[in-house]
Amino acid sequence: GTMIVVDGGRRYIGQTVAVLVTSVLQTAAGRMIFAKPKAMERAL
Image 1 (cartoon, rainbow, N blue to C red):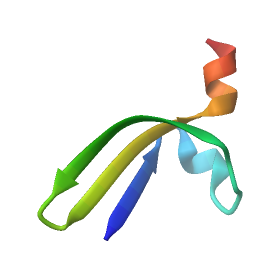
Image 2 (image 1 turned 60 degrees about the vertical axis):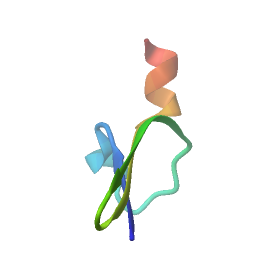
Image 3 (image 1 turned 45 degrees about the vertical axis):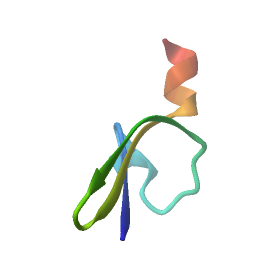
Image 4 (image 1 turned 120 degrees about the vertical axis):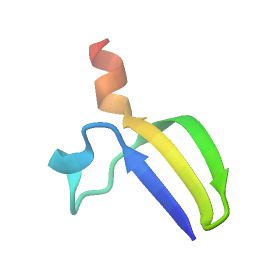
């Protein structure tokens, strides 16, 4: 399967959030996608 990990994502549980993908890792079990919220990107 595919797992998406969002940096600081705990506050967004249960919501739909626009994210910026930072990296993708293919594993034996599936794909892992790492991202950060676009709202966080604007703050930088």
